[in-house]
Amino acid sequence: MKTDSIAFGVAGVVFGLIAGWIIGSQQASMRPPAAPSAQAAPAAGSGPAPAAAVLDETKVTAFRSVAEREPANPKPRVDLANLYFDAERYDDAIKWYGDALKLAPNDVNVSTDLGISYFYLNQPDKALDQLATSLKIDPKHTKTLLNVGIVRAYGKQDLTGAEQAWNQVVEISPDSPEGQQAKRALDALKSAHTPAGSAARPGA
Image (tube, one colour):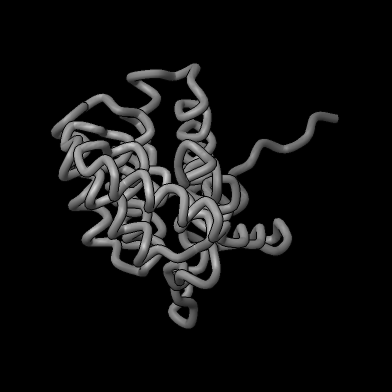
């Protein structure tokens, strides 16, 4: 896909949703937000989600042609998957990411993108299984760990698991883009847990 991961697509708004879920879950009448569907990415006060890219059929035809000519080459399959992902056609993206992984089973980025595609189809368990596969390839892959946290928090409402994943990102690479995203997520969790009235009073 065009972005490196879901972290740079929806994590900016998901952190607000995490805080909102913690606050809302303290009230019996509130329910956690639903997981995103293939039609709509999560949004929380940041305006509408970006529109899906229009599928470029010319590129699809070109990449398919290369894939047919080069059955052992994973790249055109990844290119096809990325096109479909950006057009929010996640079923098609899953097919082509899967085909690419058959040819390059140790490509951690493709494995993680496949997991993200499952997440967008409201299949968080499949997403987590695939992300676990990514971590078998590279246990310190920060992009994957960041997304594990997002799927756990937003897809499974497992904030403890999300916190553990994000802490790992910060420990591994605190100054990386993923590390900074993880820090913001952890700060949102801490802020949401701050008891009412416990904030410092302004000085005189």
